[in-house]
Every structure is written in C-alpha cells, then in structure tokens.
Image 1 (cartoon, helix red, strand yellow):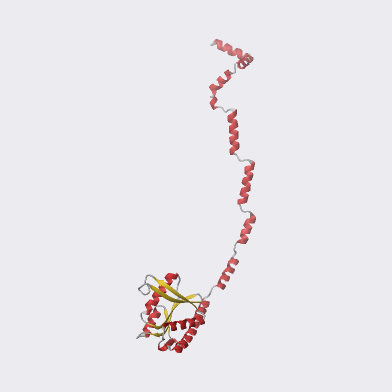
Image 2 (image 1 turned 180 degrees about the vertical axis):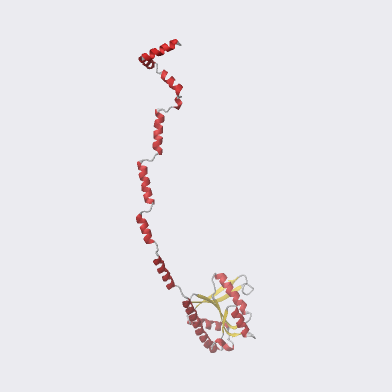
Length: 262
C-alpha cells in the first residue's frame, strides 16, 4: 500500500512519465474507457455520418418548401378568384328577373281557360258540320254503313284542324273484347291534349264498357295518358237514350249526337 502511494506521488510530481507510458501503451486508455462506457454504446464517425444523412433525407429542403408553397398557391383561391366568383353568382335582382321571365312564358289560369274555350269552340264547329253531314246522308234515320259514317266524321275533324291518329293495336290477352283481336282506336291531338274519339253510327249500352277498356288498353300499350273521351254517334241505340248519356258522362265520356245541336 505504501508502494502504491509512493508511485502515485512520483507520477503526480512527474506527469511526463505518465505521458510516456500512455504513448507507449495506448490500449491502457481503451481499457479505461471500456470500463466507464461500453464501446458498443458509443457513436462512431460512421454512425454520426449515417445519422446526418438520415436527417437530411427526412428534413425538407428549400426546394421542397418552395414546391410546397407553389402547390398551395395553385390550389388556394386568390382574391381575384373570390372576386370572380362573386361576380358570377346570381343576385336577388338576377333571380327576380328569371322569375318574371318564367312567369311571362308559363301559362296562366286565364291562358288555360282560353285554351279550353277555344277547344270547346272548335267542337261546336264540328258539331255544326256534323249535323250537316248527318242530314246529308240520312244518318239521322240510320247510316247505311258504319265505315261511311266514320270516314265522314274523320274528315270533319281534319278540316277543323284536329290531327287524327288512327291506331290499330293487337290485344293478345283479349282484354278489350274478351278474346285476342285487333283494336282500332282513333286519337285526336289538339293543343297538346290527347282525345280518344269513338265514332259509331249507333251507340249501344254495351259499348260504354268497351270504350273504357279501349282507353285503358291504349294508355298501357302506349304509356301515355288520354285526357278526354269523345263519342260521336248519329243515334243512341237504346230504349232509354238519356240514361246511356248520363252514365257515359258520369264515367268521363262526352257524347255528341245530332240532337245535341241547337
């Protein structure tokens, strides 16, 4: 123990001896450091270099920040964009102008009433011509053939400006006549309205149900709506003609006969 103290004293008084020893045997330093901190926990130059590169790879460069700024500018709205949007949006005044324009183009109740009145006036003209036609061929007392009567009425409708479409549809299920058959339907188009016209020289009681079936069949096949049913006939072939007309009217069928004309 005394020797160790003496050696320590000599080294402290002569540190050059310690320098010479460490220079001659540097492993002494590594052994001392290893005891203090294991080498595997110390960072080497390579570790520090890799760490630097990793940081550079993760951190944004000036170029990255500049690209991000440009991208944000391209996506974000500028003051000019907001101003243009404001100019493009409709104001209350614009909407009011549109409303007035739509109102001026749309049909009013008065317009619809006038169309209806015009339509009724056209029918009155047809009724007058119809009476002349019936009297001319003696239909008031029975038309000789159904086809002659039918053709004459269709000509009257055409002369009055009505577009007559003659439809011949095949009823495979027998819905109308209770057996598969052709179904002949006349449709008149006037002022956008579709009117089914049934032309017969004599209207029978049993005809009412068939007419309603023809309307339903046509609407189903053509996928369209019939607005009105008009039956034009020379006579009501029944003991009680007033009852036939009343029943037809209750079902939405308008019947025109020469007797209706003043």
